[in-house]
Length: 112
Image (tube, rainbow, N blue to C red):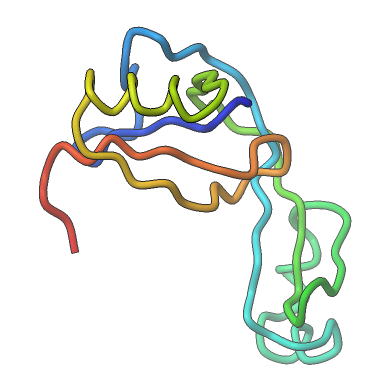
């Protein structure tokens, strides 16, 4: 399975030697319950950017243009454990990208 991979200290540059560059559609989610309410709260400019504006899971959502992301392939728990031994603490999160739903963050520095 492919994961978006980042580091706490640097989310732009190559996060690990196994990472490969890819592109992915960023999914912008807002905690607004309807498209009508979004027009009032966010304005028409929100609808002029992105595509596929919709309601999903109680939120309004739009697809934004593809962005550069780093991905890493992890095939099973054993791969994940080897990766963790190599890079230290990991955090697994939702990614915010359509093509790669999960993200691994190499937790190499404190953050709130």
